[in-house]
View 1 (cartoon, rainbow, N blue to C red):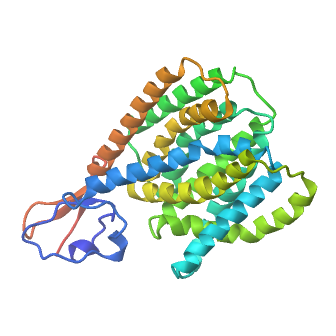
View 2: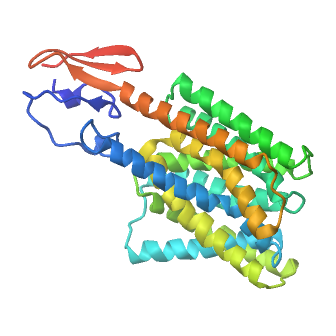
View 3: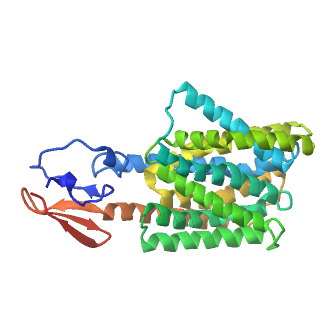
Length: 358
């Protein structure tokens, strides 16, 4: 049995036998972690940058939504947001002549659409009618940990104990800071926020999984197109029922949540998740509540406490710890051979699984 036919997982990092005959990479390994010496570190860095750009785009979502509510009702805003984003995505897909996804991917795309295209925008928009953006940032403080848990269950990722300790510490810092920032008061929008937390984490996890088998922009593009009929129907129903008062803030808010947060933000986010994994990418969102508070201060005039710089430093330390732990976990899985003609063995998370090679 040849090496590539063994039980070695495709995500393992292989140390090649110099005497072995090289084999071309198969389709199953094209999206796996690159072997040592083949650009794994640059790929990880670019994935972190892409996911970080997604976090910056997401951090503007709540302030932009607050602006959008100056001109539109909550149902109209969410429906128009989805329609505009779907038109942009559909135009790009048509221009690139992208074929339809395989039938087995449509269920996952429906989860992405239901979570990040419809569920999260609708629930957070309803919550922002009674909550400030500072208070709504609490849900984002819990989102990284929830996404990491769901990602571990759905994709089989197994981050190290150090990763989970750093993730829990970061979530605790963000929650404590954002609750203190909002005065610790609970609002009627909290039910919406916790619902948004769950559906968004599910959408992120499924999108990160799909981004391993298709480009990230196609994942969000097809999810938006899938939701277009529902968005059009929602617009036709909501616009006559909710008052519309157009102003510059409202239009800019709508444009940003449609093009910036929903399409471009999710595009770079899913590409980053595919490169570095759902768990590691999710922890970059620990910085999102703090960024949202900064934007709320600059754009909406909301107050920013003196504790913000301290919380920011603590969060950055936790993010660095999760990224370092994530890299160690990736390096821990590797395949080694004792020599030419000798047995191969897979070392994974400290446990050895031996596979014979003819």
